[in-house]
Length: 209
Image 1 (spheres, one colour):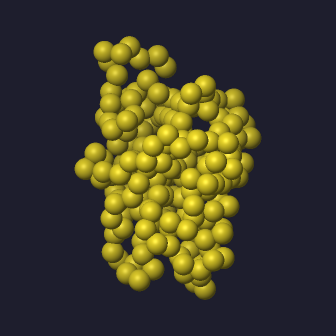
Image 2 (image 1 turned 135 degrees about the vertical axis):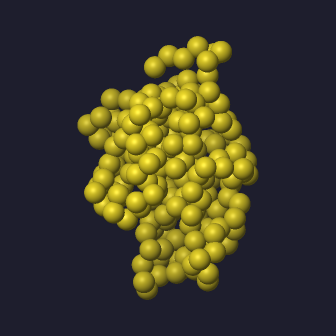
């Protein structure tokens, strides 16, 4: 969809003319926030790792966001695995200006804590795979964005090094200002700490590569 400059909708560094892919969405409140600001979602593809039935069951707050995204023309895809997204029968034929992954996480395990080396390596493998596969799906001059905590133990993921291994160059790091996204359910978008599972994680940073 081509949108004239005077009709572009903006939020933060994103605008409605950009072709945007969102990977690993939680309750889709972030996608819906973009679409609401743009007044259209026709250039947005929003994806979940889960089947739609499981998503609605486990994250019921997603329902109004999915309905709004559909109304605004978003392409919603389910069962999209970061490890194979570049070969998906729909996505493999598409190129994007921006690809976004908010707070990637390899999963929660009863016997593993966030500081455990085994889990950290799992996280790093996930992020490196995201960078490698996302880089194959970009338009010329496109960007890969990652929202990630930079406090211990998350700083041990070394995401800038992982990006470099995928052939990406760091453009900038910026604080993720939650005030820019007032309607995003940060409880669904953020990781929680090991020590206090009910405490919401505070500020994270956004990497633009």
